[in-house]
Length: 141
Image 1 (cartoon, rainbow, N blue to C red):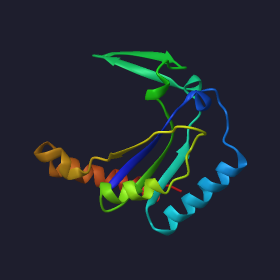
Image 2 (image 1 turned 90 degrees about the vertical axis):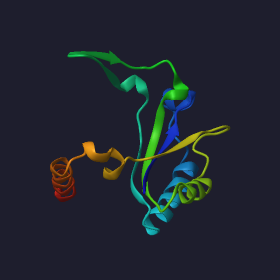
Image 3 (image 1 turned 180 degrees about the horizontal axis):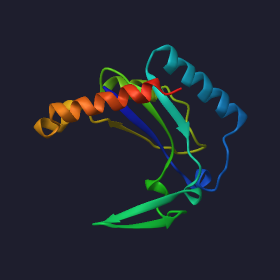
């Protein structure tokens, strides 16, 4: 099972405050453990929402909304993509994570939809297309 593990933003991350050298070292060690265990597929920190945009869709209309965005508690400061056997295993790995911020932090774990989750609407032709695209992405240098 694959999971997206999202580090929720806080006032400091939204203000562009960078982590300390100690936290960077601790996270680096933790990431090494994840990689050695074959769990970590990807992971990165994100710039504050002030450097981002949202695109709102309404029918055929597209509206670009510049950051920053008001609800800090709903924003993401960083993420990992993990492959583990279960939600329980993901939780156990996450409990070993250094606290990403001073004080209180929140990290959300969500399962990634797999092909079988889409049901019959994900036809053999669409599955083949998906597999082709994934192969092309994997081959990209």
